[in-house]
Length: 360
Image (tube, rainbow, N blue to C red):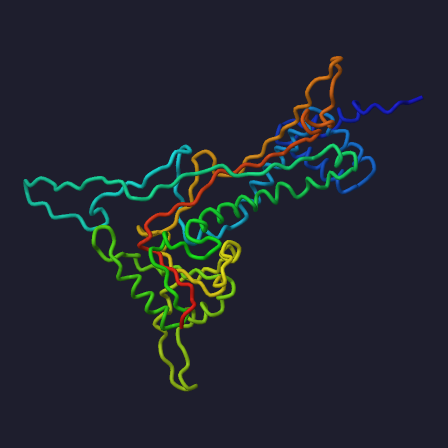
């Protein structure tokens, strides 16, 4: 009588015989997807048996990391429009170093004259990165109940969640559940988003002085007008038309055209739980300028998501082998952990303005 030898079956699987590590990772992902999808009874059986090996969960974890990083790269976060990236090398707070007068023109130097010095000073703002992440457990019960499909969406969700975390960190520097953070802006206005109020805010914005006592300069770039989804149409109607009709015949130029870049932020509606969430609007200096108010913090060497596998089974008192599919010593679970190191930064708030939009 022939007895089914699962060891012989697994020995012939692609995740065991493929010539390269990359190929074995791809074969592990293929076996997992086919087994979860129930492509055939044999595919489902081979996938479940593969979880009992020492290498399959690790190869699958590597495949998850590739998928999570691909999804991370494919997902465009909201911060990329309004915040430059600031890099740190460790978890210690980093300070921005500026030069006194460094954003103004050089001084003339006569023949034989010494160059006049400018001193380095530490700006008043700092930034740092922090750890974020979650763990997903494939429990003993889920494996017994054949619920491996719970792992299917884990890497994709983690990739998009990493981007959402970046947005939460950056936007959380200037808005909380109560609306715009006064300590960030200094003063929060209460004007509704109209052409008159937007024009007045623009004039106030561009006439501000920087630390050197000079008017801030955006290099001719449009200012970011950041609004929640509820204000999208009003914002676009105000700034995106080159001309407006007057009485149906004559036309006049729109002075707001070309001065703003409308950024519609879903994240604002998530963070702000105040009664004014749908009327609050913000102005931020272009991220390419010297007066960017926000920064997204990235740690060198930790720029993307990281996935790990934990499967510490412990040991049997009699010395017998414990299958990996039985899970960890603590909770009978095979753990897949995702980590992302990121942060948000408050930079030069001379280039920031907020209004709750509560007064005409």
